[in-house]
Length: 305
Image (cartoon, rainbow, N blue to C red; front, side, top):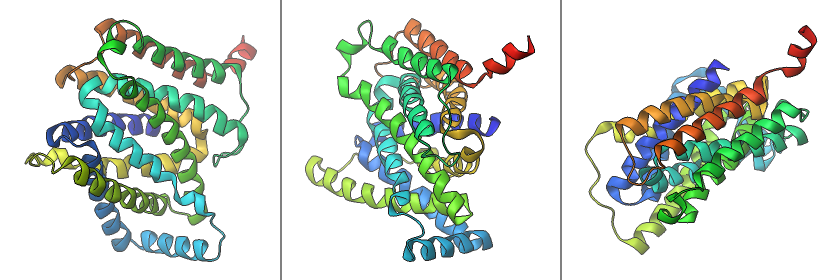
C-alpha cells in the first residue's frame, strides 16, 4: 500500500512537469512524445545493463513468437500515451488537483469492473459494498467539479479527459501486471509498453506539427524533461505490486499520494483556470473518503465488535 502511495505521488509530479512543458511549447502531444522518449531511453539502458532485464526481454520475445503471450498484453502503455498527452493539454489549465480527481473516478469505476471480471493478475475480486461505495464517492468528487462557474469557463472536453485517463490507467495496471507475471520481470513489461507508447506518440507528434506548425522553443530547464523517467519508476512499481492488492486497491491507494502531492503542487504552481478553493477542498475530501471506504475491511471490523 505504501508503494501504491508513492506511485500516486510520482504521477502527480509527472502531471505537473508534462503540463508545464506542454504549456511552454504550446503542444501537449509533442510534450508527451518528449516524456515517453526520455523514459524509453532510460529503460533501454537498464535492460541492456542488467542481467534480469536481458533475460526478461528474451522471455518476452520468445513468448510473443510462440504465442504464449497474447498480443493485447502489449497494448497497456497506449493508455499511458493518452495519459501524458492529456497532461500536456489540460494540467496547465485546470491544475493537478482537478486532473487527479478525474483520474480517481475513472480508476475507481474501471478498477471495480476489471477486478470483478477477473482481468487483473489477482484474478476475480468480489464487489463488496465498501468497494462499490468507494467508486460512487469517487464519481461524486468529479460531480463537484461540474458545479459553479468552472464548466462555463472551461471546455467540457478538458474536464472529461482526466476521467478517460483514469479508465486507461486501470486497464494499463491490470495489463502490465499480467504481462509482468508472464515474463517474470516488471521492468520488461514496462519497456514493452514504452516502446508501444513512443511509437504511437511519434506518429501523433509528426501529424500535430504538420497541422499546427512548429512548437515554441523548447525550454532549457532540465527538470521539465524528467517526466518520462518518473513514469518508468511508477509503472515498474505498479506492475510489481498489482498482483498483491488488485487493480482497484492499487488505484485508490495511489490516490492518497496523488491528492496530497497535487494540492501542494497547485499551491506553488497555480494553473490558469483552476477550480475554486471550496471545490478543490470538497473534491479532495470525497476522493479520500472513496479510498478509505474501498480499502477498510468493514466485515472484519464488525466481526471484532
